[in-house]
Image 1 (cartoon, rainbow, N blue to C red):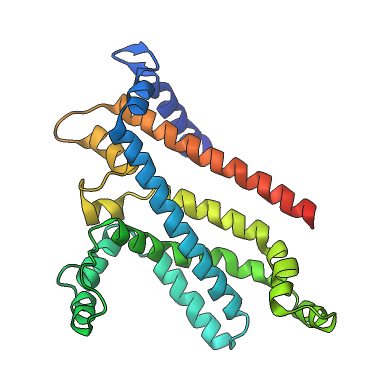
Image 2: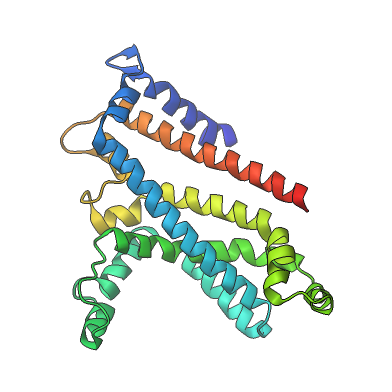
Length: 259
């Protein structure tokens, strides 16, 4: 199964990315690197992925820490909601945001009447970050919540008896223990956002330049079909994700060494 659904498609992408007009060549990559349009697509994808991942990670860390301090009924309710919300993505998620926060969305009209917003548009970079953050937060909560079980309740009490403040406890004890899980969650969120397509396309169609939208237009566009160029874009995206994963593993090893 791993060979069929992971290794074989990756090999197909790698081989076809070096095909240009029926011959082996690096021209696909040269065209991408020379094109300001494709460079902008990578910049936009990385920026939105970073922003939504950081927002999701910060929110999920606070939520996961708070869940350990509430009643089990509230905890179960929040975990059930995050399970449900993590499955709401793609076209249904974009449609829901259009209804609620579109130009004539219910929440948009309400906030305009209250004078809290004036020129916000869901069909913008900020709107995309908001949509991405929505499906990033539940995923991060589900990944981080079990990691907080590694923190013993008496550790904070012991630190307080030794004169450490709550901030000192989290800086020197809590966060170092949680750092491998936090870094691993961040990488998964970054990969999740970089590979997202359906929500962005349903919300923006082709009006915003993202790598996944450019890949789709090259293999299913109405003007021209360039599957080899799409394969080159996909391979570069894979290289970015592998690079991020390698940095993550390096930081995790350092965090374990520091402990």
